[in-house]
Amino acid sequence: MTAPIARPGIMDISPYVGGESKLADAQRIIKLSSNEGALGPSPRAMEAYKALAGELHRYPDGGCTELRRAIAERYGLDADRIVCGAGSDELIGLLCKAYAGPGDEVLYSQYGFLMYPISAKAVGATPVTAPEVELRTSVDNLLAAVTERTKIVFVANPNNPTGTYISAEEMKRLRDGLPSHVLLVIDAAYAEFVGRNDYSAGEELVESTDNTVMTRTFSKMYALGGLRLGWAYCPANVADVLQRVRNPFNVPAPAQAAGVAALRDTAFADLCRAHNDVWLPWLAEQLTALGLEAVPSVANFLLVRFPAGGKDAQAADAFLRKRGIIVRAMAGYGLPDSLRITIGRDDELKLVVEALTEFMEQS
Ligand SMILES: *Cc1c(COP(=O)(O)O)cnc(C)c1O
Image (cartoon, rainbow, N blue to C red; front, side):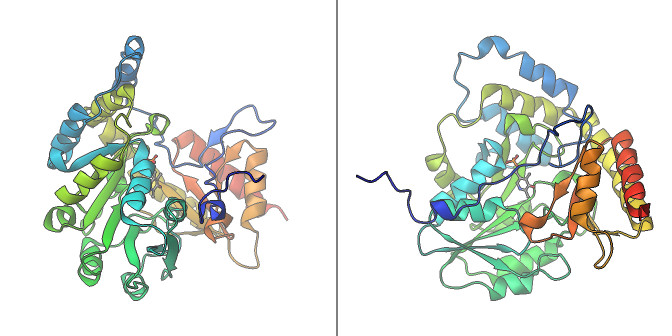
């Protein structure tokens, strides 16, 4: 007798490890490991969530009608091309399920988000990486890695964990260079934070092609990660496919309601962006002054590199943990010399800088 065996590829998956939130003996935890919005969710989103406590026996609106309308209004998009999911992670998984399988390749950038290889392997496809140049997505290297088996190309823009981005023009060059049967998925999880005029989250490519998808999330700037809420902006043909493969009630009602309220609280969103615009450059400047390399970021986190031959990232991580500060070690992404630090509140960031100053000064 043998136990059931999972399909090929499944046991090759290294399960995703989220940012930690607990330490054994610290009283106060400063969690800067998952890029969750520094100021927490909009108070209006919290109210909308709580207001549904007495309705938990009701199934949600499977079509997310009001939420899609609110997203469309907020970002000037067509509601019919929006598909909502339980986090953008679910949508990434559904795109792999629908467009890739055994023998197919799913291409992404060297330090790209780890959910891409996980989702590819889950459907039996082969994840393939293209080298980055100076920690930035390289369009040339992605195009060079395309084969006749490539089905999907994932580009996080800005990328996590590097924080770097490519311009709208470069993204268009990627799309133009890819075969038309290859689905380009632009993962714009951090789009709300980007303030560069050569950047686009990708909506115009979605609208002008039938093979480009943009995914977005409520987990980062809107700080609703605990609710699991994301969406994809799709050409009509891809939206039709996703509607067929998603679970009929994939987004809980309180998540839909909180999402709508968060979108309408534009003053709070402005506050979150303004906070990031002040504290991201501040943290980069402070860490650079300590002799560390802060990779230029347009998102709400900073990749910090420890110079070769000097103090190392693992020791810094351990030192921070002793002070109750949790950041993200990057060995899992192939960057063992780096830590990724989320832009938190000002008091939290000051304690991080204080601790790292002490760490760098100790002999
Ligand atoms: C956080 C993150 C996501 C996942 O967001 P969820 O909507 O919470 O699933 C997707 N892509 C990137 C690049 C991220 O950093």
